Length: 481
Ligand SMILES: *Cc1c(COP(=O)(O)O)cnc(C)c1O
Image (cartoon, rainbow, N blue to C red; front, side, top):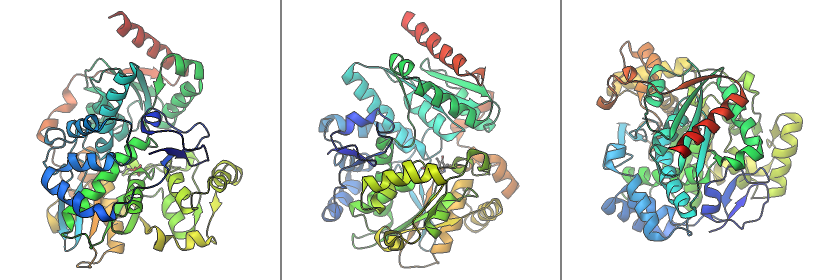
């Protein structure tokens, strides 16, 4: 399998070539040359999942896209990643039925209690494998407002050849999220709290990455959501959800996905393109409704960071959906020249692009199945309360956005089941849960008292040079050790 860039760089790269890369050199995103078709293999994949479990299903799907890691090694990586010890259950992504035909698929039982573990844990093991093979090192520099940073740290802790330098806005994450990250004592994990907001952190990461000499000399890389390996890892749980909810391969299901960067639901798009019988892919946004606007109107209008609202589902507070370009590429029939004009010319020039009259957009519901909706703070509270009162279940704020929008497209007892992806556990966002329910959310036993553990974090001003100095010092320290 070869990979191409959405902006036209030809397809000469294989999986391991793009594993450690971010954007393609032409500024595009990597996609496989084609989507392998699995319609004929659905019964076989169902049997693999039933009899051999999630890890073996993951291996079967990954191996359709990865042909430059020997099968035995890839299988070992999948089995090392998706274990009951790491993800809490044998099913890895267990489903539960809320009401007739409305299901939740639990993606948040990994080490940091958010769905990002599903991909990041695999990425950690892939990185370790590939860095070992190349005898290379990687220093991951990232910015986080919560879920991504902790998922990356838990995935990379103790891994050979990898160090993590994670910037977060000082004092702005929830106490639980701070405790999760800062309590890690591993030598290769460096928490840096920046006096500033999330955008300051992100600006520093960009500035360091734009210093190409520094980047090369110190082997700086990223783990952001545009990484193809992360997307690919996420494709697997659409299959696992489908197999759990249906009994036969002629049935269809729909998925609702709480969305920010369009990463999670883009994996659903890939699964559907492979032939998984998905009727609708429902995009659920919060008040930052850039994606809902596009799917309703055909106009894509990313917001300046200053216009991005801070909400009670903060992991969806994005201005620009960084994976969205992948879907638009497919929507345009994979015309890279046309894609490049939209994203590299029209968008920077006028701040939006408009496909409202384009027949390919007008047909997209039939071709690609996307619909959308928005959920606001009041909806979130009402949904958290209703799910608790009716079903005795706690859902987190992001999942609540999903359930709210899912109900716009799914009525009780509909023939096509609706699966809402549960993207985090309630305990991560306890302030809003307490606001809705009047009591604190349940806390898994392994997180009791986490806030009082010793913290390992350095506070720095929002200054690029000081962050660079810290990286250099840390590398010298380990080289001398
Ligand atoms: C990251 C995240 C999302 C958004 O996922 P995307 O892939 O960016 O669309 C939703 N919910 C939670 C809890 C998250 O951490």
